[in-house]
Image 1 (cartoon, rainbow, N blue to C red):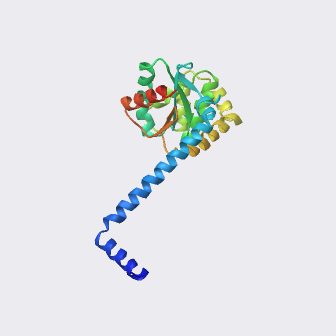
Image 2 (cartoon, rainbow, N blue to C red):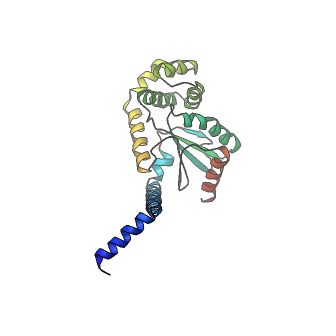
Image 3 (cartoon, helix red, strand yellow):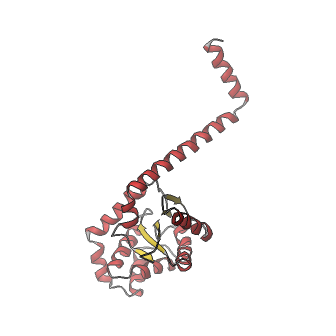
Length: 218
């Protein structure tokens, strides 16, 4: 069979069975996803200190716990808001769970302002209370909402504003953004535990399974 005849037979077969193209594309997509996941795990292994032990990232739960769950989030992300009570329950149910909060404001200037305010609140020792209060607002977290929430949470608002302008605050957000990109986390929320990355919101049972798998892998 000549090459032209072979090409024609392939052409005719594809026309008669177009589903093979769909299957081929699906297979290609799956291989690409697997390759990206493998690359992300390599980055996670190489940069574990940045992910789990960055001194500029606020810590919740048990700071001396035996397993760490890292969350990349945005205060204006509805899925992050949905996860907030689930995260609280996970901490309540697991006294050995350590949480690392990665401010990852990807939804515009309001989110950036909120992230800077939260990191500034950490300088006053009130990150946890402020973090919870922002989600409790149940509305878009604008600059006005942030300032109102800060005052209600007992923060020194003027000090917070001054701290928000400090270069280390922007540097922390920049590091989180670069790290998320390296880990192939393109949306919020994104979770990391052990050597695994979990993109997107989930339920409490799945989150606990994710954490326990990381704990078992130690």
